Length: 434
Image (cartoon, rainbow, N blue to C red; front, side, top):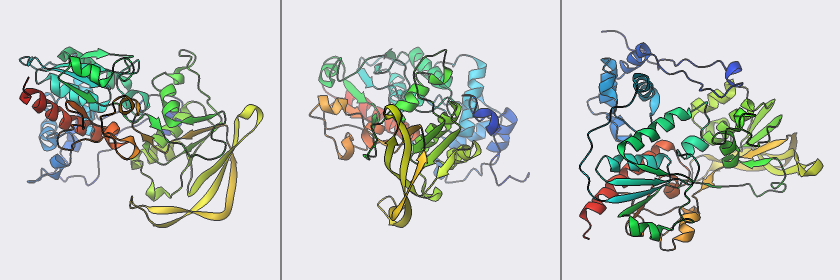
């Protein structure tokens, strides 16, 4: 028996010096031989924990075995978004073969479902429900579907062709997509319920947090939402082909330590920044960003100003930001997150010259629908409260999942919530008496 490598099969990537000058995807993906090599590392445990740990309930050992046996077609499960290196390989391989094979059309149930928001949760709900025979209409407020996959995650991390391929697949299954449709303004939830048997809310976390420090209203300051939306969905990185305005800056400071902060800092480099700086109030060990994202940022030359927190922004001519004033921090006792709490060091302020700042410290759920639907119960931070086993809200027939229910989290958790809600909706509409 061949010896199994204790480390992951490396994935080929663009060199850092090249990739900071383009918006192309950083990893190249596995070749068939590399995918098989990685698949053969699986120990095929008798009691695999990976299945229970997967929010979207993929038979991970099953598809890994298919890849190991080079049965790539049998490994494809038609999940809405490819996750992980091997699933990425399967998605790439399927795309190279041409159009996806559609499953047999199910018998129509006569039930109609409205899905509000075409992000990861909404895409998952729509895919599961249309395959059960329900009629599904998806309403997206922006001019392109995909949610955070399109407006938030940069092209160099997730090519938009992947997302649009999945949306196209949904439409082939029969899902109808309505873009530029703001539910809560054009129609209320109560109005939708007159036409649909159930409604799913997957409107995400679109309300950015700010620091509430002096100078935060100066020109040249962005929320991460606006900065990434302009760069990604509105394609400011392709100027002058797309004339979306964005202040590029030579010295760009991004405040925060999560994946979104890494995306902003790396985007700044691709927009031409000479220095891209991450300001984070804890140490590197406490950063919530994935290690791979931190590693890529370091490779590309992002500067990490750790144990520092902005105390004020200072402006110059025409109220454009000129400096960020930070206070040095030290780590104290752990807080409710389990990470050591950052504590300001007295009289340890310092200033750095900048011409753009991006605030990437988190988001709250989009408040529009709760504001126009008073009988939907919300909790701390404006999260829509749901039954964790079904996704049902306090309003009968209305379900929710993803960031609008949990606050800003990961794509895979939003998809997992979508699968739970799809089951809850199916049970509700099929068992409800007319």
